[in-house]
Image (tube, rainbow, N blue to C red):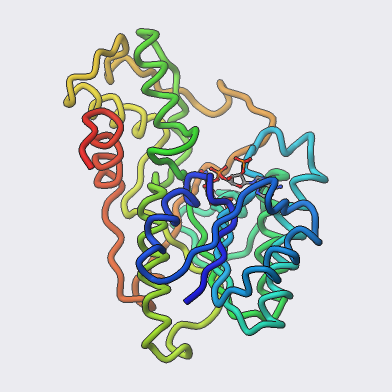
Length: 299
Ligand SMILES: NC(=O)c1ccc[n+]([C@@H]2O[C@H](COP(=O)([O-])OP(=O)(O)OC[C@H]3O[C@@H](n4cnc5c(N)ncnc54)[C@H](OP(=O)(O)O)[C@@H]3O)[C@@H](O)[C@H]2O)c1
């Protein structure tokens, strides 16, 4: 199998380089070698690689900046997936793409299902939702893996921010009324590789194209996640000024940001687990693993 991986230096892309390697040849690109804002750049790379599977982990992910750069966010998040889908359709290639909990408005009181209506609250969510639709309408075989609260060893993320601030200050306010599942980039890459492996031997009719929710299991708030990160740091003898109990829980209204976030980011993953026969471990497992790698250098 020949893979074209887009977004090789992102959190998920970095992990995909490792996870996809045993399955075949991986040609991995990032900006500017392949610029998703430039349709001919996308087409040129797909032509040159002629892949069996295109894995698109590239996206415009700056949620707040997107509010003032809607055109660039739209080009990368909405238009590019449609172009990738059209090129894949022409060649009989499959596309694996990632989507976000921010396509929902968070007003539902239970975890979101793939069949629930989308209603993004900001530009990032809106452009991602439109990209999901563009890919689905392209006619290419595809999986859209919709996930939440991604963090990992590589790249900038909430976990690293909390560890950095925890070393500098003894007080921190963190939002406690947004709920979701922190999901490690490694988990996403590993389950993607498992699914790709199944494409080799399973009847494709048993694995229909469409959106699948994929997150770690369980749930917490950003406040709960921050406390768990700090507890994990303390357990690994990290020198911290900030004790987990000193993290103050605040409502979203006390931490205004340019883009509105959904209060309920919980995604029901049972369709994914049932379809692919995979288990998604509790979010604390991924956190332990990432902290081991970051703090104690355990492989
Ligand atoms: N992060 C989250 O919390 C989260 C939550 C839910 C869903 N997701 C989705 O999961 C996927 C992976 O997210 P991530 O956290 O791994 O993102 P990330 O770390 O921000 O990586 C995104 C990648 O896209 C690349 N990129 C940006 N603009 C580009 C362009 N014009 N052309 C080509 N590449 C470009 C970036 O390159 P540069 O580094 O050079 O800019 C980077 O390598 C995305 O689809 C995202 O929407 C993420």
